[in-house]
Each structure stands twice: as C-alpha cells, then as structure tokens.
Length: 139
Image (cartoon, rainbow, N blue to C red):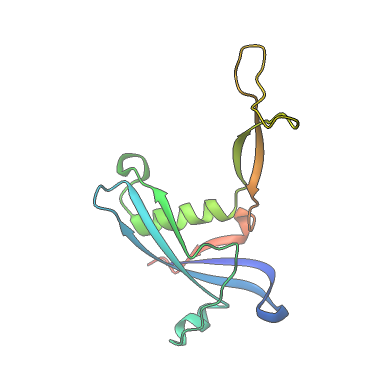
C-alpha cells in the first residue's frame, strides 16, 4: 500500500515531476494509543521498485509522524488507517489558536468576560488537494 500524489512539483535542483510515491512504515506503541508512521518518498513507484535508495526529501512531507489511535473509533486495519491519516494531514490546513497579545506590553488581551482572546492561525498549509492523493497498491 502507498500514497500516490499527482501534482506538479519541482524537486532536487528544479527537476519537474507530476507525481510522487510515498511508502509508509508503522508501529503501534505499547499502550495502543499512538501510531508511529515513518515515510519514504520516491519520484515514482518504479524508483521504489528499483531497490536502490532512491528516496527523495520533500519538506512538506514528514519523515515521521505520530498519530493518535483509538481502536473503537479508527478500526483495526492499521496500514489503511495510517495512510488515511497521512492523506488527511497532507490535504488539510493545520490551524491552531494563539492568544492575542497587547503590542505594547506583550500581555494577553482579554474580553469583557475576562477570557483570553484567541486568534486562529494557519501554521501549516496543505500540501495537496484530497483528490490529488490516492491510496494505491491495496492488496
């Protein structure tokens, strides 16, 4: 099983490609609540099958990631779960809440109810649209 991302990319010294191929390797921690995923990215499935270390580095694709796992909610097919979680990560803007600060004092700003005012910011832009990422080689 692998992810195939179909989008025009410029990699290694400006080389253009229309797709990348990502293999996932995973482990579940002892408690069964964290899924550790490592990735290897290739310019194509053929580069992976060649057997050489043709791995490429793309900054937006994490080499490793820890995903929360809940057997009741997520199911039992860990490989499919990991692929879907990575697909979702790569196709979604990551948004976080940060407190608004007073520019003159650096203190948190609060509203009339004494609650800290929070602003949503995008701290990681999506890498590709969902329709550009496919799970392939399902056996």
